[in-house]
Amino acid sequence: MNVHEFNFELENEEDDQSRIHLIAFDDITLGTERRYLVKGLIPRTGLIVVWGPPKSGKSFIVFDLVMHIALDWRYRGRRVHPGFVVYCAFEGQFGFDARCAAFRQKFLTSNKGSVPFYLQPVTLDLVKDAPELLRVITRTLGDMKPVVIVLDTLNRSLRGSESRDEDMTAYIGAADTLREAFDCAVIIVHHCGIDASRPRGHTSLTGAADAQLSVTRDTLDDIVMTIEYMKDGATGDTIISRLESVEVGIDDDGEPISSCVVVPSETFGKTAHPVSGNAKGALEALYEAIAEEGEVVQNSRVPRNTRTTMVVRWQQYFEAKTISDTTKPDSKRRAFVRASKTLQGLKIIDVWNDRVWVTGQVGQART
Image 1 (cartoon, one colour):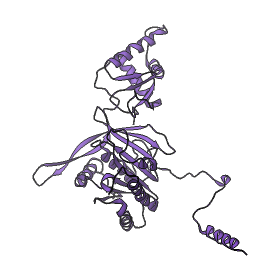
Image 2 (tube, helix red, strand yellow; image 1 turned 45 degrees about the vertical axis):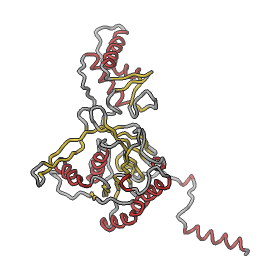
Image 3 (spheres, helix red, strand yellow; image 1 turned 90 degrees about the horizontal axis):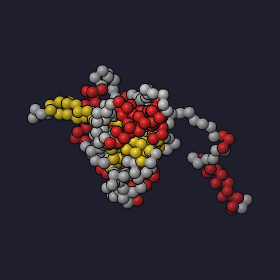
Image 4 (cartoon, one colour; image 1 turned 45 degrees about the horizontal axis):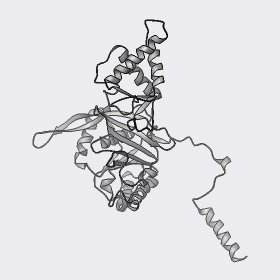
């Protein structure tokens, strides 16, 4: 046996112990295990970036979202895979007790069981402190593992520059350490850049994300969460919410303590402009067309993340809903044109080439 033969045998022996292995195509079978925590929104495992401008409500939205996971409640009609939640509040810790009290008062008055939600309220340097955070979670939960860990926000848990490749790569590595240790989802709450067109900092973050959700406010002050990217999933869907104020107590000065809870928007699908007749019917038809067939298009003329539909499809929805007083073929068409001009004149809708959308509300998907 020569040296080369001996080394080859050693390598084969090491391969038997390796976690790296090859699977033949014919042996690859479809797994049927759940692949989500919230169907079509939050993957079961992976890095999820939730980003938006300051005061957009992204922390409230994420807290509400993971509380649904902890409580095994459907989230806006979407199935949920429940489990333990660890929420790392790296900023805004002072008001988190009021936020929990508001949720408890609004939604948990009849709940008798414990909620598998754990708050980590200390600002950390995630790159340095990830091993200690991992140990504390393991010690606290024992045999149980979290299904999701929230890092809110990236900026307050990164010691370095968001724009430097090395610093952001190290942060992603620390988040991956938590993800791999617990085989869970890690939600990173992050701010937007100067022009509000993308998450702030180095693009390695978005490149590493398994899902990316944006959170914005529309002209009616509703909170709009849009699925921008989903590995092996659909994009463009939106969830429209609003904040509802809840008074939870009285402070030492005798002043009320209040916070907010997230509820589905009641203004969604409505307009501040009074319309009637064919214009009202056309607007209702447009909402239906966008809800059922709308899509986000990449066009500089269309507002970012806005779901649109084809004008011809809108017309078809309108004509299907309209009862005409005449049998003339052009009757409904003329009614549609007049209604369209009325809605455009009121700036309720906008049209560009063959696409139409509702102004003032981003992504018109009924949720």
